[in-house]
Image (tube, rainbow, N blue to C red):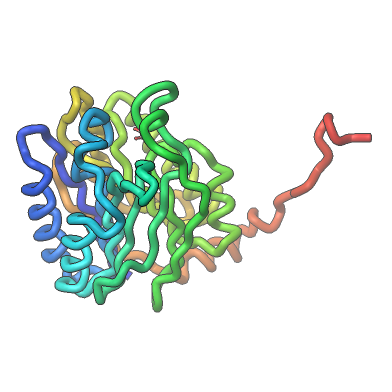
Length: 267
Ligand SMILES: O=C(O)CCC(=O)C(=O)O
């Protein structure tokens, strides 16, 4: 199963429309891949809070339309990163969209952990409630998470319990915390014995330099490929059997001790 991560640059001197066209054309160039991944909020920029309302899209808006067409033109599974979704009741969500090779919406995921503490996404957006997995026929079962979610291991364990074999994480991670990014991506791969495909953005928007350094890690924690800081497409071959082999040879997931009493529940 071949995967390509498109680490697109998000810079304020390019319009959202132009970036959307460019992203679609980059997706079309990956027709040799089975799965293509774009980063978090690449149309507007993950830190461009002031533009969230203006660039918010209904579930079947312009990014959805452009990405559905790009997926079917290329004949690939497309994790199209995330958009600012405006739901019917007016709530904004950071919503990831995944398209099948015929351009149908196969899954969507509303980011569960909102970033910003008392500002930005944390106050402007609603929180997702649902864990999402998606089996890709003939390939791996994907588990979906977005950016700041990476800091919450219990989410990933939930995805693994639901069958995930490859954790796909679009992000808009800042350069100043790049060490956390690479450390946490590898940790999620090792502890869950799963592939991790983590796709960030390049460039600088809203004054926040992006880390880039998209990275693909195998179920043993080995880095298969890592991008630099600039716009780049990272292509790797994944072996679905490697997840089963790793879990069979080193069955740590079977040694979990669930339901132990805590000091509060101990009689
Ligand atoms: O957790 C971090 O350091 C970055 C998170 C982030 O930038 C985001 O979720 O948009």
